[in-house]
Image: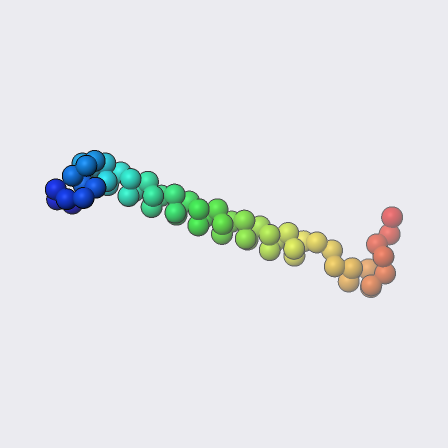
Length: 60
């Protein structure tokens, strides 16, 4: 990074560590968001729609 800006204040290795940490958090956040979205769609598909009973209320 050279001797300018944040690199001068914290050191090059510290800047790289923060960059990698930020990148990891972003990737983890995207993965969690994607998993939550998929599970929500799967739960919607698993819910009974009433069509399996011909439009009549479910027994019991």
